[in-house]
Structure formats: C-alpha cells, structure tokens
Length: 585
Image (cartoon, rainbow, N blue to C red):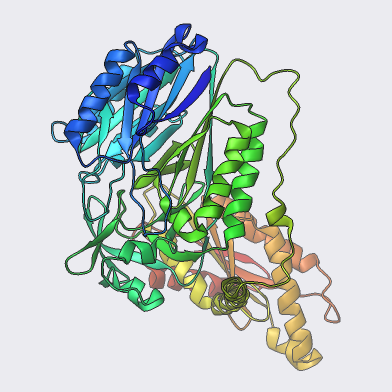
C-alpha cells in the first residue's frame, strides 16, 4: 500500500489534487482507495459539500470520509488552516464505509447494525471511526463493537469545531455531512496489518475524586458531592469563563480503563457548574487530577515511534489532542509529531474533541493523547535495518532548569513522600503492630464483606485460637519472650494457611483465621494442621507451646455477632476439654 498527502489552498485546488493523485501508478493499480479529508474551514457547509462533490466526481471509485478539525485554543496556537487530504491506496485490501445519523438511529442500534455488516466481510483488521457530536454519547456504538469483535482495534477521532462554544462539528461520507453521527470504515485484507500506539505522558496527583452526580451523555453534575466545576476553582483557581478549556486542558483528569490509564477533559461547562465531557462516564468513577513535564510526553511518544519502526508501516494516521499543543507549545508539539514522520514521511495528523482507541486492553474515547495507527500490506522487508531515532533535546542536562520544571519536581518529590506516609498510616490502621497481621478492625471488615456476598452453598470457615497458659509464659520468661512467641506463632500459622486466606490478631493471645471457598471438613483439617505444627515447634527460650482452636462454618443467616458467638463457644469447649485440641461448633 501507499499513502499520499495533499494540502488544498489558494494555489493548489481540489482539481489539482485529483489530477495528481489519479496520475500515480499506486492509484491506478489500487484494489481499493480511501481518502480522508481533514477540514478546518467548515463554517460554510454548502461550500464544503460542493468541494466534496467535486472530489467525488474527479476520483470516482474512491471512498471519501472526513471530519472537521478543532480550532486553536489560543491566539498563538498553530493549527492547520487549509484542508488536508490523505489517500490510502491498497494493493490487495478493501475498505467498507458506513454512516449512521444519530438523529435517525441510536448509537447502540447503529453499533449492532454495523456488527451485522462486519459478519459478511472477510479479513477485517481494523475499524476507523469518525464521530460528530457528543449527545447522544457514541460510547454504546464502541461497546457493541468491543462486545462482538473484541480482537479488532477501533481507532479514530471525535470531530472538532472552530470553537468549543461555537460551530457544530461535522463528519462526512461521500458528499453527505452529519452533525450528529458516526462514520465507520472497515479495513480488510488477508495481508493487511494494523498496529496502534497510545501515548499519554500525564501522571496522576492529589486525592481521589469520585463522580457523585452523573446525568448521562457525558454530563457530570457533582464530584465528591460538590458542584463538578468547583474542583478546578479549588485546585487550579480556574473559574467558568471563555478561557475555561484553555486553562484546564493541561491538567486532565486521569482514570483507569482496562489496562489503559486514560485522560478526561471537559468540552465545556453548563449552568450550575456542570461539566460536559465527550464520552460516557459513570457515577462512582474515580479520577485524579494530573501533571506532566514536556519531556514526559516527548519521551513516551519517541519510544512508541521507535517501536513502530519494527512494524515497518507504509502509512501512519495520527489523532492528537490540542491539549498537548497547549501544554508543549507549538515547537515541541511539532517535534513530537515529527517522531512518527521520521518513521513514515507521509504521516498525517488531525485534532478533534477526543481521540478514539479501543482494543482488548480497554480504552474508548480519549483526551490529551496521541493515537498512532500504522498500516502495512505484506510482510516486513527481510533486509530492513532498524535504527532507533534519538532526540538530543531529551538527553541534554540543563544548566538552567525552568521554574515550572523545578516546581513539578518539587511536587513529585513531596507527593511521593506524602504517598509513602499515607501508605504507612493505612497499614498501621489495619495491621497489628507486633505481629504484622490484620488487626481486629480489619478482620471485622473482611468477615462482614464475606458474609454480605455469600450465596447458598458457598463455604466460609472461621477459626479462632489462643495460646494455652499464655499468662504463665509471661510470668516465667517475661513479656519480651511472650511477644516473641506471639510473633513466631503468627509466622508459623501464616505459612500453614493458603495465600488467599486471612489471618488477624483478635486481641491479646487470641487470633482469627478466615478461610474462604472451603468446607467444614477441610477447615477442620487446616485447624488440626496448625495445632500439630505449633505443638512440634521449638519456641525460642520458651520451648513447647500449645494452642486451642474453635472452628465453625458460617451459616447463610449469620451476622458478624452470631458467627463470633459460635466460634468463641467452640474455642471455649476446646479449652474446657483439656486444651491443645480442635473443637467444631
């Protein structure tokens, strides 16, 4: 296959492009032709429609799809000002494009219909999707694809507009223009290969933020029970005004989606401080604000571009968020895109309201990222020599470190220290200081949880044990020796039970073992094994020590209190029966 790229301006018309591309051997001999049009000047839809008709007339047999691009976020941002087109000319592959107007069919039904059409196609290797509008949310369309064809990569972009608060975005198929819908293109071929890269670079920081109010179609009303937009005022001192997007896009919200760490930035705000996002979210979703240094973004993209070298792409499509350009500045943003242009000179990039990438690892509609799609027909050339690219800018040790870099480094260091402290405090809150196993509070939580999720037939076993004549050990050998016995006993029992079982100190010399997914017979055998190993163990200075154990199986109607009452009674029976024994309650 071959990729060709053209820019249409005052000196080079659509007719000029059609003449030049149709004259190429790759075009003349192609089994299938796909033209992507990225249109920045889209205020006049009639002019755009006429342009598309002209291209269609000149290049009959070419599948033409496209989208409008996002305008600059500030007066200094460089974005394309003229239509750009790329042609993907396949030697053997085929393309199948479908358009769905969400004013006529909902996204889920459209997804089901497209999946039915895919069933009739052979060797589908990837799906290109271009979306206009965020209400209704297109997410159900991608969910249907992921459910039916989880192995297929889905990639593309949400179309942009001149202004987030202004002109509507559009996608087009042939000479049809949609302001609310999706263009889906199946790329097929027995020897067609498609690979996708996803680059982010931002790192989460600060406390977790939970969506507590969600109205559907990407509208978040409350975060942490406060007005949603208040997080930007609280953490960034950003208010609701005409520069809201410019002020917030460099600080995306980060959340986990499958194996991907994904960014979310609002497209704008609504009355009452609600935030509108370009994708479906959900109540209860947890996010955190994030930060970055320019080198974090550049290093990740350079590494991805070098990985794509081994793939030997014949074509590359980039879908890049303008939030990265806002953060990096024009020069560094161009430098980042050049990494892929080094891999494939015909690489073309486009920016909309959200990048699209969904694979078996997760994803969906993304923000602040670069989605890179490489394509190739045939095998990697046998004589290919791979020489990774290097960027001297990333290797320089700066004599003068910019103020913002110093502040981010300080923030990183203090955040790491704070995280360690919080982790230590969390461990202290749930673990016994002497033995290191769970404390009573944590064991209560675990048992309540296991009781709450039980179903009839699920076995849950509780074992309670304590040390026989422990007071005598303290009185004879001292409390330090008694503490050593408690510690050594805990290590011995922990090594005897399964990894997934829970061990905790109930208080003093009393301990609990919570055994899940096992029956009373096996639970009793575990308790007997513990008793036997303790009896055989030589405890430092003290010598022989024995324990008594009570074992019970949780009933479906048990509460925490009733379960403890029964296991305590079983332990009492073991004590009364002569100690160093197991009793079942």
